[in-house]
Amino acid sequence: MNTDPLFSTPSMAALFSPHMRIQNLLAVEVALARACATVGLVTTADAEALRDECEAMRLDPHAIFASARTSGTPIIPLLAALEQRLSPKASRALHVGATSQDILDTAFALHMRAGLRELRRDLKRAALRCATLADRHRSTLMLGRTLLQPALPITFGLKTAQWLASLTRTIRRLDAATDEISVLQLGGAVGTLAAFGDHGLAVVDQLAIELDLAVPDLPSHASRDRITHLLGLLDGACGIAAKIARDVASLSQAEIGEVRIAGGGSSAMPHKHNPVDAMIAIASARIVHGHASTVVGSTEHEHERALGAWQIEWVAIPAVFEHAAATFEALARLLTGLEPNPERMLANLRTQPDALMAEALATALLPSHGRTEAYRLVTELVDVASSRGTSLHATAAADPRIALTKDGIDDVFDHSRYLGATSTFIERALQHCGTLP
Image (cartoon, rainbow, N blue to C red; front, top):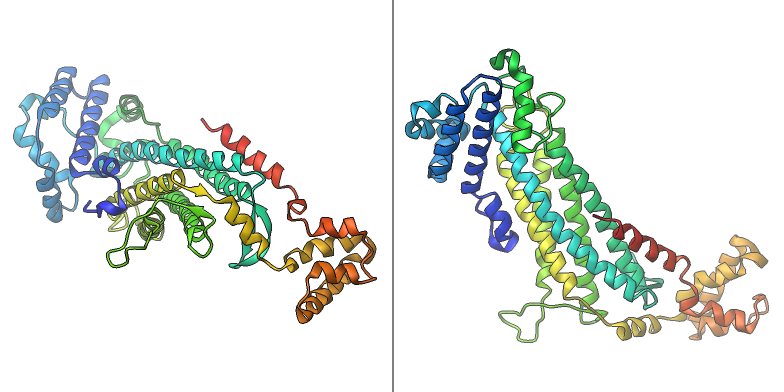
């Protein structure tokens, strides 16, 4: 991959680098030889010779992948390069019974398993930061916004608990997907294991042990549901990260100022404090979506092996993982550096007209007026207060139809008394996160 470093991470780029891809392909070939040796298809000495010579060998990954332009698969030039360098003894154990897709798919399973573990670390880091914020700011009042407009009071703890809950669900889904994707592929030319004679199933079982991968129910050369499910999950996970990043960036805007975040400068404006981490998370998530949707939208793999639809995975899978890594790392960094500004949150809430509490007033009138009449009456009072330039609080207190005591009306306009089940929701989010392994 030639991914822009801004939208990748060094560790994920290394994991999917040409060098590491060749190393995983060799690891699968060696493991296959050892599995074949256990059933007598090759000798143990030949399999061990292949292992020793592959470990000592230095191949040019760029030359191998360049040669794939004419062969259609990197396995053919890889085998050619190996045959030129291997001893006759080691060559006898090479690529027995397998087809190119067996080696490539199994190597990608190794890449993806390692990649998912890395992605999980940053997601867990982001989740734990959200948990800390939710716990500390359970009662920190702020303005809730719907359709980008002032809505009702909430707490910053609830907002971060929502972020936390979505990240917790994401981590659980990716944990399950890690198990599902950690499956080897071995079927031979058309998925029958015919080239292994009577030993095919035994070779599969042993190969799974060698690579610590699960045994599939049957080969899935042209059934790509595991891959599409995983990339769809990563796409959705990046969307969640981007939503949180956009929320944080919006709250950090100077005219809102409810959080402070680390930022970058401007090449032209010395005063600028740009939300760089939010930008990286949002941009990387959008790139993930493009690559993931390419694979998810190409599920019509023909017959026993696809022409084109499978091959695009070689580009899309590394790209999704690299850009997802950038998304989650940037999110974790963004949240780690986030500093809430409770005073500004409260100030922004209090600058809103007290008509913000119109729903609370209508709710208080339900026992005496019923929903329809209460809603109609409060709507009328809002209009009257607006036309007269008075507060809704004062307008309601002066209206004889409002069957509430002074204390009752005062309670209606107390932001802290209209938070519903906020405390319970925060506690649930914290508990669910707390059970993550």
